[in-house]
Length: 221
Length: 194
Image 1 (cartoon, rainbow over the protein chains, first blue to last red):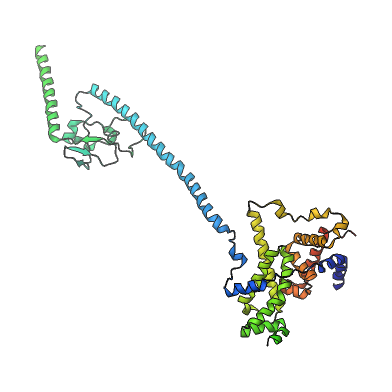
Image 2 (cartoon, each protein chain N blue to C red):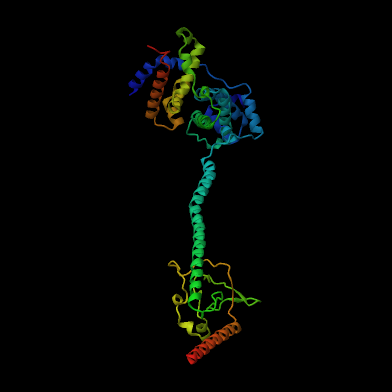
């Protein structure tokens, strides 16, 4: 083993000689003075400490925050757009439904004179708040535009509509949706009993008048 | 007393410094090792100012951590280990600085020995230029090989001492020295043609 290394040394003999003959570097004259000064001043900061080193953690931490913020932004951005779209769809639906409602109510008015007015909205669940001017603000999520738009007044007064289901009460095409979560800002009037009775009296008088007219026609015939 | 101290061996001096905190013992050890360490670190790093700082830091570390020296080891291997570690750290730091520096020029990175290779042989034979070429070629050798080559062929330390300093087995030290020499010879093929 020794021989091999000796042979190797012979192979590099010239170079090794040059390496040994390289001039010896000596410390500067003030080396000891500087050293003692540093020790006396307790200046023990080494070269490594004095220069800030590149720190991967310090570099990666803010960039990770930025990247995660961008990712979160792109995750939540489509959902917010969806919400916006839903709102848009909802308003479209409402517009469509209000159009169908209006046409339906017009038909109803033509078909039957007995139905008084669809402008009066009645809330079967009396959970509404009574205003000072007998106006109610509906707190529930059910839209007055969609279901139970029109009712039979007589049935309502007599209490016969209690057994009616929601599907029979309205003539509205809901596009497969029963109710909308969107409650528009419609101020509806609470059905006043006196008003209802007045309407009923009017209707009754019309009915009586019609009956009288019919009987008179029969008599004339 | 002072006269006696100068006659002390390194190990006796460090013991004196450890036991009695004698500043003269520290001074003598600094005087004894400042030049060999300067030579070693300069050949390893290749910059005189950085080399001075590294040796100063070595002496500061020796001053602050005198008690970490254990008497079963040679003082020279202990102080060379400190200097070697600091020099390696300095090299790493410089490499990082070059990587992340915007202003690093190509001149800074390439050791320019190629330019000198094209000098006429009579000029290349000139001692000073030859030494410069050897130093620059040495800096091109891988640090793991460079360290052991310097310790063996320039500082003239034994394989056992190098093994202690580097913490490597003697066989590994010998093979690394050979590889280092081969690399250096290859780099200096223009000078050592035969």
